[in-house]
Image (cartoon, rainbow over all chains, first blue to last red; front, side, top):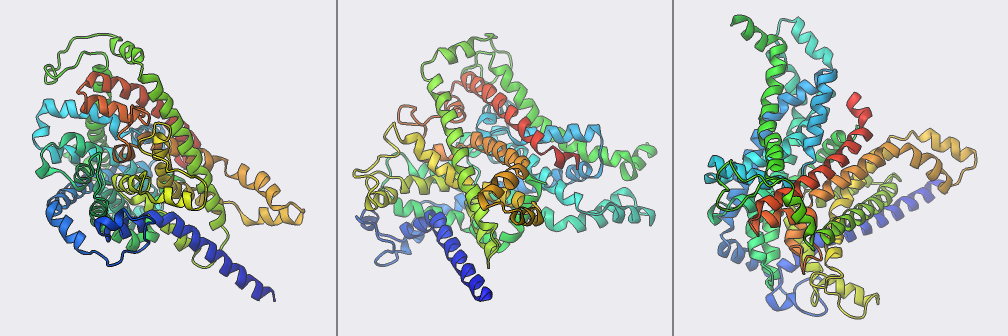
Length: 278
Length: 300
C-alpha cells in the first residue's frame, strides 16, 4: 500500500517537474519553432505551435545571406583565444591560492573576488581609450581577447581553486619525497588529478566568450572581424520584421553551446556549484 | 643566478612566479583601467584629445554636469527598480523551484540541471528571443495573456514607457532564475536531514520547519545568492541592447547601459567614465557583502 502510494507520488512529482521545465524552456522552443515558419506564418493570429511545413530553408538562406560562416569563425577565434589565455594564466595562480593559507593569500583572493564583479559595460570605456592610445585597436580581435580574458580570469581562478583544494596535499608531498621538484610535482601529479575540473571550467569560459558582446561591439568596427553576437545585433535593427530569419540565426549561433551543455550538463552543474559556494 | 633558478624550479620562486604572472596580467587589464577610468572622470575628454594622455583637468565638473542633467536621476532610479525586482523575482522563483526539486524523485537532478541552459545562452540571443516573445501585436506573451483573460488589449512591452523596463526585468528574471535555483539547491542539500526528522517528531508542521530550520540554516547561502544576484544584475547589458536599447525616451535605461551609451553612442568618454566610477563603487560594496557571506569558504 505504502509502496504503491509512494510510486504515485513519485509519478505526480515527475509530472509537475516536467510541466515546470517545459514552461521554463518554452522560450527556447519558441525560438526553434519561429525559425521554421514562413514570413506570413510568423505574424499569424493565433500563432501556431508548429509550422504548416517546416521551412528548413530559412537556415540555409540566413547562413549564406548573413555570411554566418565568417561571424561564427570570429566567435570561435575569440572564444578559443580567451579560453587559452585564461587557462594558461589562471591555472597556476589558482593552484598557489589553493595550496597556502596565510594573510597574503587572503589578500590575493579578496582582490580576485573584487575583480570578478566589475561589469564589462563599465570597464569598456577606459579599456577602449587605453587600447586606442596603445594602437591595440588595430588588432581589434586581440584587444577583445585580452579585455575579456581579464574579465573571465577571476571567475576561472575561483572555480579552479576549488578543484585544486580537493586534490589531497599528501599526494604532492609524496611526489616531493620521491625526488620530484615542485615543477615536476605540479605538472605530473597535481595537474593530472585536477584535469577534469579544469576542463569543465575551460569549457564554461569558452561558452561565455562565445557569447561575448559588449567588448566586441565597442572595439570591433570592421564587419569582417565581428563575432556572431555583434552580427545578430546588426541583423535585429530597431524595427525588424524578419523574426523567422532572426530566430534561425539565433538557433545556429547557440547550437554549439547547447550541444556542449547537453553533453556535459552534469559536470558543468557540479563544477559551477563547487566554486560559487563552498 | 643558479640559486634563483633553483628557487624557480623548486622553491618559493615557483609559487611567486605562478601568481605574479597572473597578477601582472590582471593589474594591466583590470587595475590600470580602473585607475585610468577614475582619472578620465576628472578630465575633459573629447575626440581630439582622445589620443593624448595630457588633457585639461576639470575637477568635479563632470560629476556636477552629470547630476545637473535631468535624465540622470530617473536612470539611477530605473537601475534601482531593475536591480530590486530582478533579484526579487529570480530569488523567489529560484527558491520555490529549489524547494520543489529538493523532494527527491526520479530524474530530479537531471531535470533541475536542464534549467541551467538559460544561464549558458549568450545574453544577446536571450534578448532576441524575449524581444520577439514580448512583441506588441504578434508576441506570444500578449496572446497567452489575452487568451487566459488577464488583459483585453495588447501591451506594447518594448515601446510603452510604462512597460519597457519591465520587459527587460522579465527577461532578466528568466535568465537568472536557474542560477539562483542551483545555488540554493546546494544550500538546501547541505542541511542535515535528521534535524527535520527530529522537528517532525516534535510535531512541527511544514511551515514551522521551513521558518525555524530551513531559513536560519540557509542564511549564509541566501546572503551569497542575493549578493551574487546583485552583481550579475548590475552586469546585465546584453538584454538592454537586444530588447529596448534603453528606450523609449530612456524609460528603460539603467546606469550600466547609460555609461556605455555615453562613451560609444555620444562619444562623451568623460561622462561615460564618470557614470562608470560611480557604478563601480556600488558594485564594489556589493562584492564586499558577497565576500563576507562566503567567508567560511575562503578561510577553508
